[in-house]
Length: 338
Image (cartoon, rainbow, N blue to C red; front, side):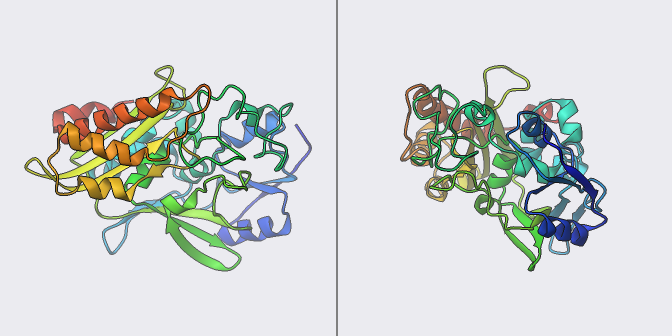
């Protein structure tokens, strides 16, 4: 691990000032991803700016009925918060599917959004990786790419985003509140993470010196007919091969509203407005769910070891939508237990 300086931010403005003063600095809250990256010499910050004591730990309703979640709220606290369980249980389910209880106790909401890919070549500094060293090449292209992306890839990178929480946030139309040298702004969660393009080393659209301050969820929470499915190699402490966050609004058996987002398949949570529009006004049947899956997976590109993901994702989408359509209070009760 390289030598680095340490500073503690007193408030958000102080954190922004410290970031602006040192381009090589990194923010640290729970540190559940950054410390691992530093141990492997993937990240070599010149300074760690401790933001763990900033006043960003509240979950509160806003005047328009939305919910504002501070960037430093621990994942465990958020999953079991009464307002999340009652109004946004899809988010609680996704969080509880991630990592381990110990890590969820430490990990923050903002840190979860900022975690980097778990591509083995990204972590292995002895191999070329465009995310670590732009222009050096992508070892996963012709290497072991079983866990890699099938959607939104580029010639430079086929890594996936590892976050479970982000998949549910994408489905729920969450917005990310940001503060920086130029003031405050907010953007849709679906616009926060980037596809790799020719700049795979840039994971998000967070600007220089900017910091996440909160996540905002709209009033509409899809609290009745929802499901989160995570398919992985083992039942705990494993990242998704494919994950699906699905939420429906039903009038009888007719779909009046639909949200579907995928994880484990792209550099960002994957959502298709076309697929969701195709579901609206249709009966909640496997045939219509299958058509939505086809639309979600348009343009999927398989590599030498991950071709199975296309059919796996298709089946997972149909299954998760079916579970959401058939959900009852009794069938959802287990999702509040970790």
